[in-house]
Amino acid sequence: MKKLSFAFILLLLVAVVSACGSSEKSEDGKSAALNTKKLVIGVTAGPHEEITEKVAEVAKKDGLEIQLKVFSDYVLPNTALNEGSLDANSFQHVPFLTQYNKDKGDDLVSVGKTILNPMGIYSKKYKSFDDVPNGSKFALPNDPTNGSRALEILEKEGYITLKDTGDDLPTIYDVDQNKKNLKFIELEAAQIPKQLSEVAAAAINTNFALEANLSPKKDAILLEGTDSPYTNVIVVRKENKNDPTIKKFIKAYQSDEVKKFVEEKYEGSIIPSW
Image (tube, rainbow, N blue to C red; front, side):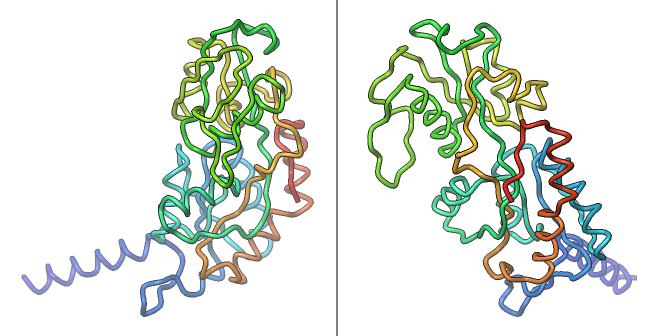
């Protein structure tokens, strides 16, 4: 009976490990070639999830199954990819990836462009940023890349100036001139739409704006331009950057069928970048 119980436990452990991802492991523990028929892709809820569901439809025609794992924040998709429970993820732009690798000492890499989610500045109280009173509260994401992105929008529109930070991302402490004497409130990106009524204005990432029924094109009082460097990308572990199954996924993503889906569904609020 003891032998039978031990065998059952061992079988269960093998099943759990096998379910963690679709890649095989080499002797040194790193990911070897990926499963040629199935990929596990991490996305954030909202547009990235919806678009990748369309990508899965296209990939299926080419014999590739896409399984989605949906996350509600910007940290776990990279952690899961690095640990091997994902084969790739699609939710972030290059500056965010660069900062993540720098902070965590990882070497995740970008392998293909996806979409631009133009960051917008929103307000429930004012129709123009010019109408925002001096000394007002302004909410922005507390992660370094999206926080700096919000500040760069304000700088481009002439409401603040930023000190030269060299290779470092600017923070609220690098604001030099503050035309409206804005009081900066840093919050988790996902929480900002819920706090919009508590501040004069706020910078909100497109995926969270759409979840809150805010249209970047219609509702933003300031909107990032199409020349933004914050195009989103498909990210993989370094050892998988040339994997043929990943290339098949990229081909499906950057297809005319997916581009048409994005353009028709989001009507300019999200822009295909390939």
